[in-house]
Image (cartoon, rainbow, N blue to C red):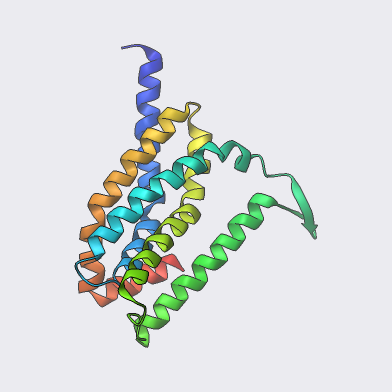
Length: 191
């Protein structure tokens, strides 16, 4: 086997593993958000949301070289330079903390989460899954750019990782729905 192909194969395996590890928080959030839908719609929402999220990840990957380059400080806080990438990650992280804390609060004090019309609720969940996947995948996309040089290797690793996430989502959903402690642990993990 050619050394180049061995390198590409090892890079692909490494990226796939990294995508899965870095995608666990994404999968937890997707499971929690989709569990607000009626039982029959939940698997479809998870699969469709993750399937559409592949598109956003691949688009992010295409712009990853630009994102990685956003390290030039826009301003300084004392001795620390703050770049556009730092601001983007800070805002995304803040939004994630807010959303996880809100979900945690709703787990403790339930609200009528099903008051939205069923069609809008499904669409809202799909949009949330796609938006949060974009936020969650920034770290994995930046990591992919640092590990591989070929776009197609990075894209293939992302696609395989998302397929594995789709497969695991039903099992994780069952765990989170069945065991309140796992749900609370998952929400704390997100925060």
